[in-house]
Image 1 (cartoon, one colour):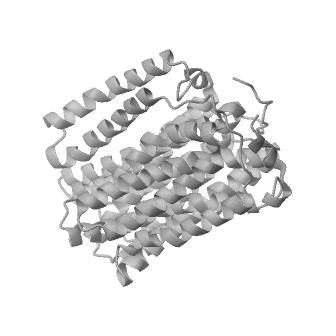
Image 2 (tube, one colour):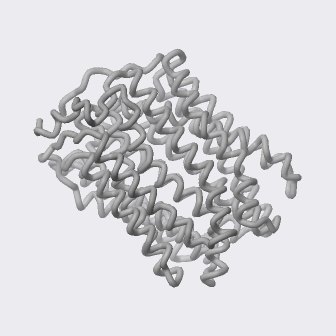
Length: 470
């Protein structure tokens, strides 16, 4: 073990039992999630001011998610190799610099390029955030509480994002949606260097670049197929070719991981039903939730003529429930285990989106409040259980990889949800039909996740088994 590992118990950094490392890590995670949710209410205004089409602004939203998803495994491997704290801090610097470039972008092409770089920074931040928490908080109870509060921070950021984004867009302009990340990034660096202990390094952990290229190709092809279907049609040659090449890229990734001496994702990890199932659940609930947020944002502004701020307020019932749902599930997990919590959350999410569909073509807003609340609460209520299931199933030597896998699948789900939602809106006979079809597909995704939870999530209160060296 490297000398850095000995710093893990240094009391000056706030060690196990202190909330300061949690605060430092969650500040970076807050910035990443805030950027995801704040952008949604700003997208229509960006499109108008930059003269961009719906497909172009989908790329602004999805460019970030594309590199975020595609590079997470590399971020996890770099964290294992170089130390998660070091890579986490590097990600915050990249993310902050890219945010400044987004705010200064003169056109949609530059903005999309800067969003791609922003996603790369996020891919370094998120795997390190979970791995650092796992490193600092050693007991199962502490970890469950830390993961619950980590999930709650996502809820706070998700709640603040639409409101803050709407307020900034309506007052000082959409560019400040990105500039607001700069002070948060500085605060995160200061807190992390002061209160988070240096993490162990594994110099033998290499980055599998061929596998990384295959994963980038897979996510890019999937996003292209779903994004461009709305503009070109579902049977366009580009759309069909991109869709057909997706399984090819996936097969190349699997083949490379099977043959590699030091794979980015050891395929034996996927032999764990809790780990593989938890990752799939994360993909499905991100697909449903972020697809809902994106299509609802466009619906409220395009169909109902709401301002960005009023749109943020309209979405608040969904995202506000996230603020305490994760913390609540973290507290309940020690008594109930994660399975009933994940199942309950996914069923609530399904009921919420089904309720939107059942409300009719142009329902009064008050009829949408309960569906929005159910969707937001259900998604966050399941997040802690899915996170803990994946992390508990992985050996300590691959904590960063497990975190990266979980967040990769989640971000692929987000990209697919946004892309499919936008394409359904663009290709449907009318806007409201596209919204309802999108919500119905999201409800089906939640139900599928509930079935996977029955099959894959452990039913008894989670306990971390002894580390395995692999």
